[in-house]
Length: 286
Ligand code: SAM
Image 1 (cartoon, rainbow, N blue to C red):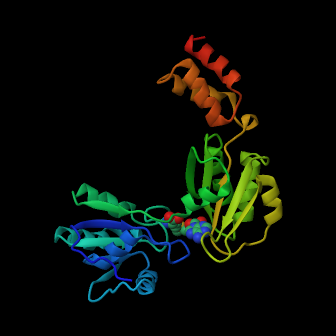
Image 2: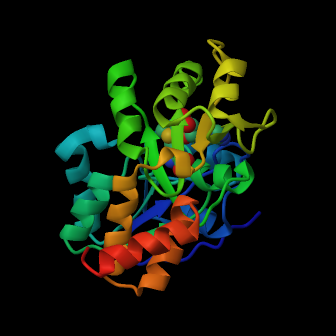
Image 3: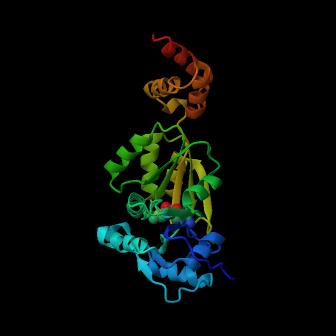
């Protein structure tokens, strides 16, 4: 396939790459990769392979390795290229750069220095998992990777327990059983949950259940492949009165009693009448 090669405006281009199936790349991403003066990548080998698959010629253009751990020195090299008026395309190993992947420090410094920063959006495991999970998508919270140590993991789960939206976690296939057990303990075993594995790949799998049933089913098995775990928002039985009151108070700052009650009841999946009474009481200053 011929990719449109055109002179790109100088600046930094974050390019999303596939999370599995190689053809899940956008035409614009390929145009940018075909046209940029310089390509930078978290993993130069996988970037080279992607270019080959799609027939994008690297030619004599530099392919530079960049990771946020490359530190200020690695960034300085790319910023210098931007200063010279070059167009620099950056891709992480898979999916969208900056999403549990390098790019944040590079983006920040390029923005602060006044260079143009653009995104060519595309695949991300978060959105793919939300699309397939069958859990509400009106509000969600991406919690990234949980800490490996049990104590720290349980504290991190405690911190997101009352979030009024679907929780999305990235997890290692080795730790998913332990993570589900801790999540059942901290968030409540009856919450609906979904384990998505190998999205967009040959062995794509979506397992649905409760935190408790999935923890039991997976046990201490190490799964294979890449995993996203999603957990439904807390039901009324998991939400403390304090959390509800705080949410109602916040909603009342910008909404009428009726709208605040409706929005909080929907967000926390609790009965509207109960929240309406609470909102009335709080708004009258009792
Ligand atoms: N930047 C990527 C994105 O936009 O999704 C995420 C990179 S992060 C280092 C890698 C993690 O993302 C994996 O450990 C897994 O949790 C999740 N992931 C990436 N690809 C996946 C896939 N095909 N299926 C399931 N999870 C995936």
